[in-house]
Length: 205
Image (cartoon, rainbow, N blue to C red; front, side, top):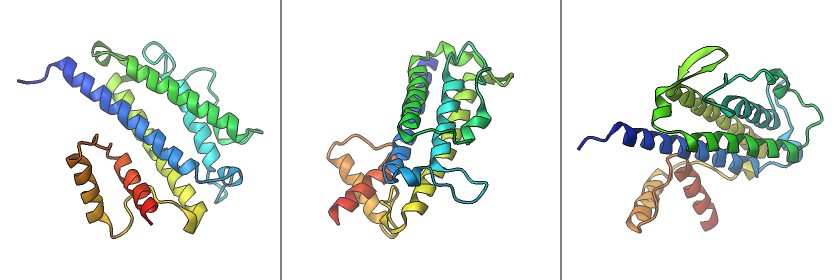
């Protein structure tokens, strides 16, 4: 029997929420590997530090997801340019803003209903369906999560603890997933499975 519209929507929202959470955890697996000096370290003159990417994500989330259905996603009090400037911020404060931004996002996603997906919202005055707005932010945070991971990896060098399948170990990764399924374990999110395998491989060394 074909799924109802409501069932399809519930599945989509559950997957979107799981993917947002997976990107958050992936970024945090990288963040814990850098110290405070490395957190604020910038590379090339026009590149951003990990700290500024964290600051930008938090600012974007507060703006996009606060009153998601009823207000424009670009809030009048947001100063996007300041998200790419260090203004005496400390890491602890930036990470509190990070947590608050993710809490706003995930609380909003978890509150959406099937009927809400029939609505439209605006971002900078441009109309988006709710699905378009969600997908826009999924890709945005995936992009920045990749930057955080790459920067942390470059900073840590040989001390980096891999968050993906190590080279020449794809077969072992497939066996890891197969064993997990056979043992009745919960399926890993596609973003998190490689990190879980890498961590397990590191523990076995």
